[in-house]
Image 1: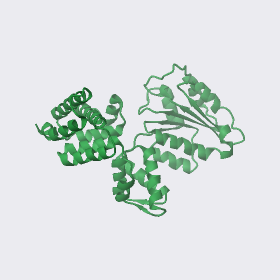
Image 2: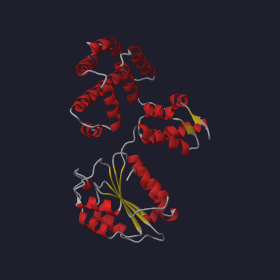
Image 3: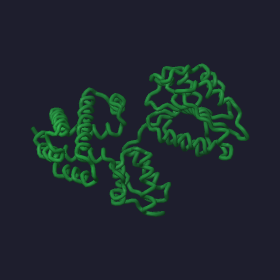
Image 4: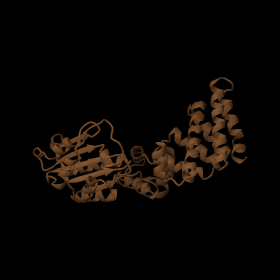
Length: 343
């Protein structure tokens, strides 16, 4: 089931007895849990009929027992069991002894007064397991993966509509470029921009550029993007803007080295046929930086990347050992960057 379909069903009052919400987009999983909770439980009985179990510390059988308990002065009880790693191929932490048989027995006869929600922040389930097959047949199994491109821009525009303001495609795409696909941060940015333009107002690209909060890492990616297009002057302008914002040259150098290493790693893994999701898992990096690095990797030669990384490592050592002034080192880097890229 696609994630938007589940929200539509719940809005229509169609709530299943069991849900398995999995994937790496934690924000949407939390949003879905809250939506189910709001629709199923009267607010005055929330403290009595809503419970959360962390399966890294508590066995699944305790969550099942709670789901089998009748709600207190209400129609429904909602039980959330987080970190259900036994449904994936990943090893669970904490050494908790889970009785999967108790969950399987519950699937055979779920109570109609409870909603059991299992969550796991993994991008894949172990489809071979009987309990996973049982969850698919009895309840709703919904993947929540990071939103990107059209899907993300649509989400941003819907957030604008919820706040009573307007936003076009270009502005949504610009906000994506500036902030990235961290939905929690995007919500905060939308609150700020909606407040600025007022009810019924229009969030333009100009508003996004003036109010959107950039991170240092995103500015570094912007700098690298300009360098990849051999626009060294613009790259240097970004660097000088960072200095005006009181960023340290050594910090900038370290982040440049880290991002160039990421681009090189992505370039190598892409050549070996790995997908973006696989690379994110291997490198332990969120899928969005992987996507950006993959775009940059197409414009860099592997030899040039290795040369730049080696140069930055050497400069880092020279700065820290007092052989060169940190500001001078960065100036020289930009002066030599074009040669490193072209030779």
